[in-house]
Image (cartoon, rainbow, N blue to C red):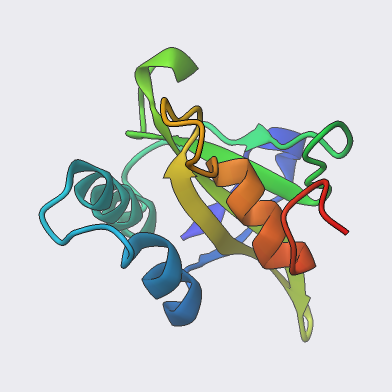
Length: 133
């Protein structure tokens, strides 16, 4: 499935096994977050769902340059209707570009101790959470 959208850049969408297991596998098999993630992946890979890509902010408290996101569940008209997010990083592999899955999680968790999807993405890319040295 090619991913075009924010910025108009088209590239293949890739879900790496390790990232998927770490990000989605941490949820109980019957939990709503895991079901939402699995359904979103199925729709993305199936190519039948129009994707509403949103560029992540390249600066600010959680800078994610080269990343973009999808609100989950897919197809909701307002971000407020989608409590979860998938974050992807644009990666060059040989002669192609890929939107590689980086993180899944709550966009704005109600529990202050829960890391949001953007913090999780930052850590997966940079090896630490934002603001930590």
